[in-house]
Each structure stands twice: as structure tokens, then as C-alpha cells.
Length: 110
Image (cartoon, rainbow, N blue to C red; front, side, top):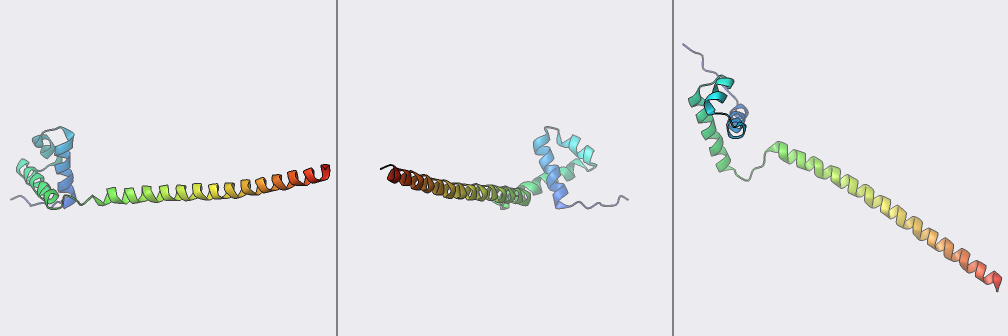
């Protein structure tokens, strides 16, 4: 008598994804994974059912990666903004300094 093995949902979903994206036959993938063809077909069906029940749910890894990317982008934009603020203040002071020096020279020349 054979012992029944248990697989995680993640493993089943990954096997179903492999069938959809690898271009190989279901039979080849089932043999590579060491499971029966009927088991793989059942996993594909379950995976499709789960996707149909929750089509708008993005996988957690994709969402986490997007959040990480956006936080990094926000930090870069904050740094750019701060640099521009400092540059604006610097050039504003330089402009005042040049005007005050130019005005002083004009008075003494008269």
C-alpha cells in the first residue's frame, strides 16, 4: 500500500503555474514533480478556482515589492526637493549680495 503524500497550496499553485508558463506538457511536469497526472490536473483546477474567486487580489510578493520601490522613489524625491530648496535659498542670497554690492558702488561713484 502506498503512503499518501501531502503538498502545500503554494507547491500546488507553483506546479499549476509551471504548466501554464513552461510550454511543457502536463504529463512531463507531473513526471518531473513525481506526482500523478490526475493529481496535477486536480491542482490546476483548484488553482483556477482560487483565481476566479479572488481575481483582484495581487500576490503578496508583488505588493511588497511595489511598496518597497515606491518608498525608495519617495526618498529620492524628498532628497531632490531638499537639494532644490537649499539651492534656491543659496541663489536668493547671492542675488541679494550682488545687488547690495552693485548699489553701494554706484553711490560712491557719483
